Length: 301
Ligand SMILES: [Zn+2]
Image (cartoon, rainbow, N blue to C red; front, top):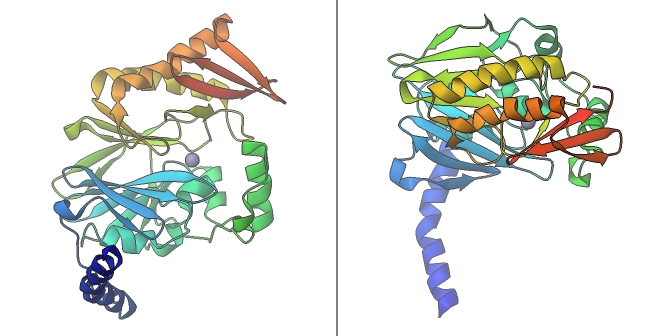
């Protein structure tokens, strides 16, 4: 009986699924989902509305779980990060807005730029790391980055993982504003985790999109391109933002947290420098922790 009900539901849903497939395969317009349809799962993506005209697109894979954010104005939408590229994030975004979508990356690590190649308009800073990353990442280079970052091999399902090249079409600078039509966003450079980290500020709604410079978990300041001194300076910026904004939307962990948590980064660095942070030896790295935040540094920091 239960099985019959389930198959009945399945038959009822088939025309909708077929319609979605046809519209995609013929290159027609994807129907935009209503707020009441969300959250929904589409391939590796979970689509959820976080506030007005703003959505989280969370991609799950054996390599990483990463959240990208789509912010729509009246004329265009901005996709902040494109994830790993294990699915079609352009098609996922088209389920949320019919507006043209431009891309901005929080930084150019593999788990944030993987879907860039799907987009025609990509904003990026004029920094060597950003320019280099746009050339793509071969599998060998990806594996060596992954080993260095996580101190382990990537999952065997990623045996052919690469980042496809893409083209940055517009240079952005620290303090720039992006006009989406009736909605203005601000860019602030926040290096430390990598050389080209930036945060996106939605002042009108009191929200900071922090990329990997802040999330709830172990922050990485031990990578080859990490700069702990730059991270310390960025921690001062984050402390200021903690007082000015209401929420922070990070690229990993939960999609929304109180912005006051941004101040924990500076507190943790202060404790590290004062020798009062809890510390654990993890091979050639040190894992520091205080409050509910952690940070990984090289021993020769
Ligand atoms: Zn990341």
